[in-house]
Image (cartoon, rainbow, N blue to C red; front, side):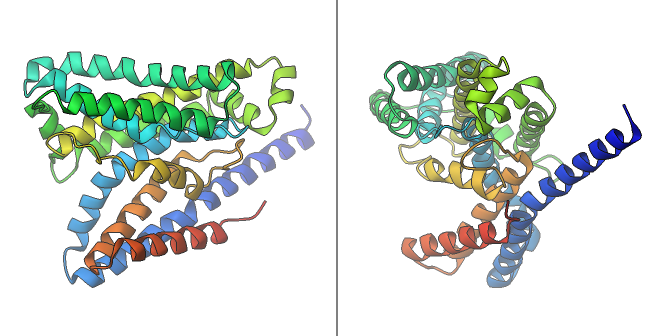
Amino acid sequence: MTSKALTGSGSARASRSRRWHADWLPAALGALLVWVATGAVAGQGFLGTLQQSIIVASFLALVGFGEVFVISTGSGNIDLSVPYVVTLSAYLSASIMRGSDAMLLPALAAILVLGPIVGLVNFSIIRLLSIPPLVATLAVGFVLRTVVELLAATGAKAPSPALIHFAAGHFIGVSPLSLLVVGVGIVASILLTRARYGREVLATGQSPEAARLAGIATSRVVLRAYMLSGGTAAICGLLLGAYSNGPSLDMAEQYQLGAIAVVVLGGSAIAGGRSNVAGGWWAALLLTLLATLVSLTAAGPGVQHIAEGAVIVGVLAAMPKR
C-alpha cells in the first residue's frame, strides 16, 4: 500500500472519530446542563441526584441499546413492542421467582428465551405477511399486553431478594446495575463498530440492495437485530421489576418512544446506516434528568412533554449536519 493510501486511510479514520464524538457531544452537554439546573432547583444533592438518575437512566439505555440495532438496519425497521416485552418479562420472572433466590436462574433462563422469541415473531410477521414494522411490532405488543394482564390476575408475584439487592443496591457508592448496563453498552458498541455483524448491520441500513449484492444475508441481519432488541428489553424487565420491588402494568410505558428518542438523540440515524451506542447512554441520562427537573418544579405532564420536545429539538439542531 502506498504512503498516499495510508495517509488517506488515516484521514478517513480520523474523520470518523471526530464525527463519532460530535454525534454524542450534544446529548452529553445537554445532560450536564440539565443536571446543573436540577441541582439548582433542588437546592442540594447534586451528587445524589446524579447517582439516582444514572440508575434510572440505565433501564432506558438498556432498551435503547437493543433498539439501535433494529433502527440501524434501515428500511423503516423499528421495534414498538419494547415496553410490552419489558412488562411481560417483569411479570413472568417475578411469577417464576416468587420471592425465592433459588428460582433466580430459572427466571433468568426464561426471559433470555422470551426476548429473542418475541424478536423472531416480530421479524416473521414483517417478512412473511409484508406488514410495515411499525404496525407489526405494535400489534405484537398488544398481544403481549393481553398476556401480561392474564399473568397479573394470577396472584402475588415477587422478585428474588438477591436480584432486588443487585438492582437497587450500591457497592462503594457505585450501582452494580449501572456497571452491568455500561458493560452491555460496551459490548453493543464493539459489535457495531468492530465486529463483522456490525458492519453488516450498517451496510444493510445504508443500502439493502448493495448489501445483498455484496453477499450479505440481509434478512438474517435484520432477524438478529430484532432478537437482540427483544433480548435487551427482556433483561430490562427482569431488572426493572426487581428495582421496583415487583412488576406493575404501567411500569414501561415511557420506553416505547423513549427508546427511539435515545437512539436519535444519541447520534444514530433514524433512517439507518449509522449508529452511536455511547451517545444513546448520554441521551438516556439527559431524558431522565429532564424528567427529574420537571417533576421538581411540580409542573404537569403537559409541561414535561413540551420541555422534552424542546430539548430533543435543541439537541438535534446542535448535531453536525451531513
